[in-house]
Amino acid sequence: MNNIEIIGFVAGILVAISLVPQVIKSWKTRSTKDVALSWSIINLSGQVLWIIYGVYIDSASLVIMSSIALVMNIFMVTLKLKFG
Image (tube, rainbow, N blue to C red; front, side, top):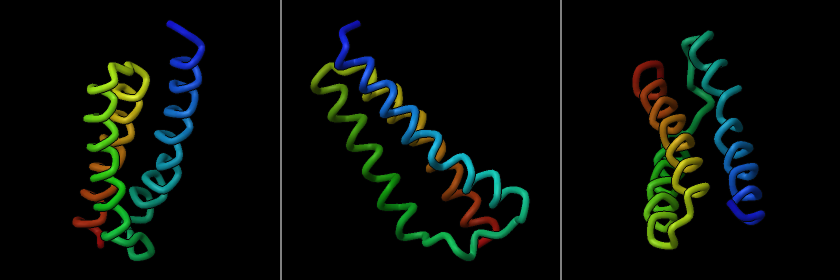
């Protein structure tokens, strides 16, 4: 693994965990009224495109970390639809 991939993993970890506080808060309060569904859908779409791009350029860090972020986004959209 080269240094650029390490930077990619660190960046991906930060992006992926950035949703964790919102997911936890939404789950505990059972409220997502302050979360825009449009933001969630746009973010989710972006993560899918990052995964496709990562596969295309053969970047393990981009694919793995974007996949984790995608799961977090799917969870957030699910919470929004359930508790919206």
